[in-house]
Image 1 (cartoon, helix red, strand yellow):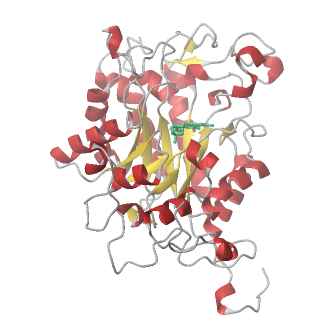
Image 2: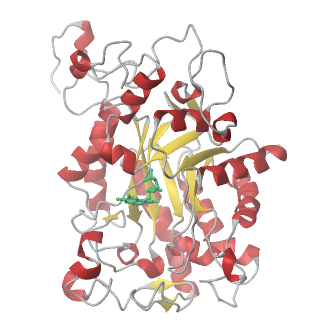
Length: 431
Ligand SMILES: Cc1cc2nc3c(=O)[nH]c(=O)nc-3n(C[C@H](O)[C@H](O)[C@H](O)COP(=O)(O)O)c2cc1C
């Protein structure tokens, strides 16, 4: 970029490969800290990374990648959140091998050509003063399926399976054991030990590529019934070797992946892990991955270099039974957080996700004390901290400006994008 003559307020964003005015402080930063500010709008530090607020965009598959490469669609989709003040935007589940994509149109990072489109998105997010993360995963037995809008009655093929003619690989689907997710999914093959070793290497290489793309953090996808969950669960993992049976054996692959990734990312870079805290199969009376096992795993994570546990649930069985209510998953995050703190394991932060749709709910989840003058929250849930960070998915699709809207609702004055300054709501306007 050539040197540009501009007024001080229009100084270029440092490091951006295109001209855009620096947003300093980043959009979504609380401007008046002389009085009490809800924890939701206070900074969160993860190793060398500082988020100016407690919002993150939860990873969301868009089923729109081109042979694993993200496109202009993703730039606009993800850029919209960063522009509007989300401190951390996490790129969708990105597969470490071609056969680990959920659908043929999923994101991937198994080859170097996939770095550049990701870097373009990271550069944009950074140009707005915000942070970028990427979720790395492998879909296991839920791979080679169709994108949601091609499923069910809209499927031109058999069941949910993406056949070869639709870009799928139904005969090369991996799982810990040869048990399909449901009769409508591909029939997987039990992974060999060589394939397991290779998978750990693939995670490591994808993490190296993510660092090259400039990401500030990586989230390992250990949730929703994809490959790492499948190994954790005694329902999907029936192996009799060192990867199946006991808790130690079922967690071995996940722990190997964490070690491999941690080993190649900078010491200063935080590492996140998403797990399904329960697979909602307790009702069967059979052994299943549940909250006590999650807590047992969580206690091992700080020593492995995991900085934040993102507490999700479900997705490993088509027979799961969930009783859904607004706090159904957030409360589990709170349980895990309490269990860690009770044992002095307070070093690892907790992310809450799932059905967070209102300003009051987001505020209550991370509020670490009830200061005078704060918004009162109805019900018992608001009275106790559940997490350190809130991750939202669908609400950001509905309202990409949710951070700005939440600030207005809670009466917090935050920085707006310079270019949108004239659109800010009047100070006391109720939304
Ligand atoms: C369109 C869509 C795509 C999703 N893709 C992913 C994904 O790539 N990785 C993941 O861990 N969760 C994924 N999820 C789950 C969300 O990250 C989130 O955990 C879930 O939607 C609950 O949060 P919400 O109530 O705020 O939507 C997806 C959800 C949606 C709606």
